[in-house]
Length: 256
Length: 240
Image (cartoon, rainbow over all chains, first blue to last red):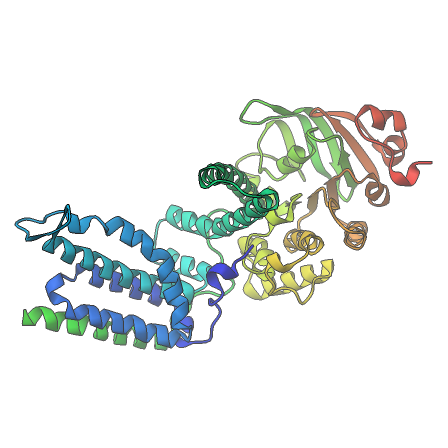
């Protein structure tokens, strides 16, 4: 299974790698909440948020291109969700006609706001998940009293994503070994069938893996070799993070 | 003490297919038993019932513990199953995590877990490979690693589903040696009758979910007529 697709930076030696998973989870949640709640007229704060993620990325000692690569893979989803926003008026909106289309100013602002916030939130999530062992992250969630069912779902999602990659690779190999030349539409039909087969195959394999996990005593709890250990450096990092994040936010709101 | 005691054990799949019909048998502690039969005869289903992964009807006792909701946790500690496909058994980023998965679920202390992993790797000849991803291992090594995942839990009964299928001679030989020197109760299913000749004392022949015959290796694996009538053939070592 190709775990290195996903988490080959989880075992680093940077300060960010050494932070307690609970601290990282807290930082991520707090950061995302701050980003989501920031209105457009406080747009200066977005530079602060960008500064924070860049500092953390620098601290992680992982190449910035690695994070950007992951971000680029996820960004199309945000774009697809928000791409129609500029074409809908928001209250009394100023419209501009481009050919037969009307674009609204407030719509464009909303589109930008959604994209900036989503990219910042994703950047932070990628930073945290890249530099933390998944099982330790789940252990941190367990300590935060996240419902066991939610933790079990995430842990299965994590294990089964590699199965999915595995199965896709096998199917592509079988397809390419018998594929000569097909018109685009026929090729699409083949891919559509492959997706259906992939679903059934991964479902069955997922069930077999669950049986193997269950027979080795798995009962939905996360057990790790290293217990979480909150250190003095974690408290210091938390304090610095809160000062960096909360200070300018309060200042920006008081000045408005 | 009996390791396994089954009386009128039945199992049907959710689609209604009956996989096991009135299975009654008794396996003693320390016995090495092979379950043989054609494809679809219920061998693997029987194995997965031994630690409560599949639940059927009828009586099933493991080391005197009746299979029920209260005992299933104890039974899972007693019975370790190695599945046919090693890729189903190895689901963690590294071999170390895969092998430590069972002992950690047994709530063993971290130091003990590390020792158990090392012992299990040494037992199957994969020492030094603990930080490798299972993806980078050969099929034979993955098969040995999947045995190590169960060996690290020190179960009293080990169930092996087709342990030597698709293996080269060297890895097949390693598994035969591992079974031979193991003093635990071992129940294995296989089409590799030559391997059974070398490792087991007793054979249970399954067909269409029922026991056709239960006897010694001599009584079953040397009986060509019995084997042929059940879609099997004499072990290569016994063929003239």
